[in-house]
Image (cartoon, rainbow, N blue to C red):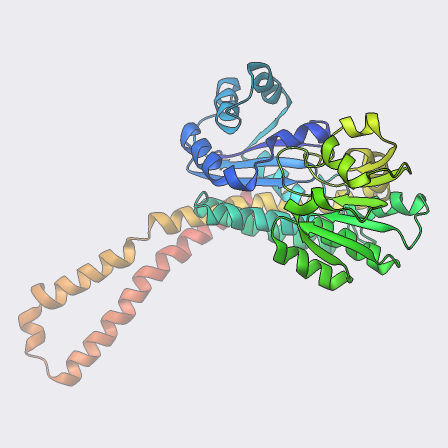
Length: 411
């Protein structure tokens, strides 16, 4: 279990806007992660990126020290300066073994989230694993670990009240917007049609807003969202030519750099001098900070939702102890599961060897004697050998698992 490591940047270690530098854009993600995995010599790798965290789950033998982290970040961020590499090395949180398990279990159970009790994170963890698996980065250990992670998160959600009256980053943004008394005829520009923006727009539609223009890199995704909310869909590439005005921008894309630049904002706002609202839920931010110096903009972003999130944590503190007990038990259980799996892998050749022994006995050692048997006797012998073969395979596995369980109980 000491081969399991985790390198994390979260709202606890870094400013939310700083976490964005570790987000890998879609077009470079696979190649960059494969290069990273090769450079550090990891056997398995999983990459998780959300609105307030970027984490790397590794299976590899070496201890993670300063030199390892420097190699890690140089492979991850090949264009970064030495000072940026040093900053990343100093900022990240590193976990190993049971601490790594406890951390990833807590993440999926939303105990380590900006908004405690936000159930979206369990889906994000599952999607991160599936994406990493599709890129052929994961293996048997992470398969077992993520399965236990999802199982643990579900237990926390069902056995505690940690997610009762759930509050998400999206709902916090909605609360901020509602406090600004935006009129129902407000014009919304929706940039990005992913999970976060879809959830945000559903809030808006539910509360009476109806003027939406949806822009997305993949037009079909924009069309799907626009059809649901009664809006219009456009390719993201045409955003600069949009001239129908807006009151609120809601943006959340996976871009590595700000996509709403001063030039783009100028083309969108034209001669309109009224104060606008931008809800920026992307990490890194989609809105270029230079815009705030030149125009009157009310920004609602992930980083300025943290104070509201602290209030959310206070409301759920009494459930944390129960949730943490579930996580602690899951860590202990996974230790046994991993040992059992190691026994399975070590004994996976047993069925082959048993079959070889059986075939040698029938076709060589006792071939002449068996040939003298009648058909009924041969059939009986075959049934006896099948029975013995199955027992020779199952009994050792069962005994090994019982020994592991006894060890776990004693510990």
